[in-house]
Length: 473
Image (cartoon, rainbow, N blue to C red):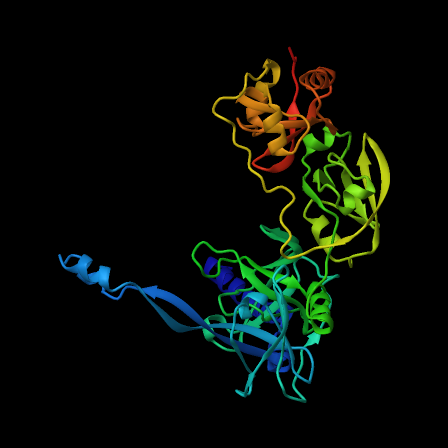
């Protein structure tokens, strides 16, 4: 058989095989059409209006080169002007009598909220309540027999699942985009109360507040944020898990606000060096770096250097888990904390206080080194690269600490872990510091044991750093 005939035979065989194979591949792809048709009816467009007051110059800036400009500006002071500012977002109906869920930031500071249904009917909406910490808001429109979405659960959501987002990006109503779940339990800066769902479904401004569906047509999240360097979609979107959103919405509906527990501690992430310094084999848990005096944790005996491993039996894998788990529990309830202290597992029971929106952070003060300290006693620890000075009584009083060593110079191991001049060492190995000698002895004792946890006060914030110890001199 000639070469030409062999090539033709192979091409014919490939054509015969490729038809059924391509058809089978197409059948394996998700079909979102029924979800869009059935659930899309309950997805709404939300527009808001608010009055913005701004200051304008009575004399236009284009006349600034005119020699009489300053003269006229002196006798024509800036004027206040009001203008209407409009914004767009999305939402979805959760009850036939008109309750609508969306993002808090979609309706923040809105004076008027309009909800537009899929059939183009418009309703003025009333804000039942909003919660900025989770970015969830609940609205009410006066209507009956409305289409509603089917609510699912985000608890069993798996990375890699197909998801569908429906909303109004840039005002284009009822736009559907699809993708997969890229990750779960994402923590974002300043967003400590939501374990975000990360997806690559295209989400843009205007999608905020819209639903994220699974392949069953159930809402498993509320589209909330995107990660972008350009302001547009870049493949990373974040949604609020529906389980979190529903808990918040129920409190907003019944009480008009959300009540959260607090224990009055600041925590930080554990890395392997810090975990090893406290005798933990694995870097899991939340390291307590400061305790509010007189707060719930202080009353229960919790102290800086404790590592919270479980909250009412739920594992704490990272420091980001702790605000979320504690915040989900109502104030006044006793909570069991499994902690690690002095290389031993312990149990502490804390009665939760209530988190207030206006509550200040645990540490707000900033320490500034005086230009002429009153003859400080210097201490040099060459092996870890530190030159220290004892704080004066006035400085200690100002900082509210009983004892501290001011870092004057850093190099070597101390510089590598991020210590800097101006830091104040207040503890070592989970124990409060009372003298420079105590620090030296602790470093000498840890010389062969690797890193040791040093507690530092930096610009009003307590934190632990894992200092690798050599030969302390």
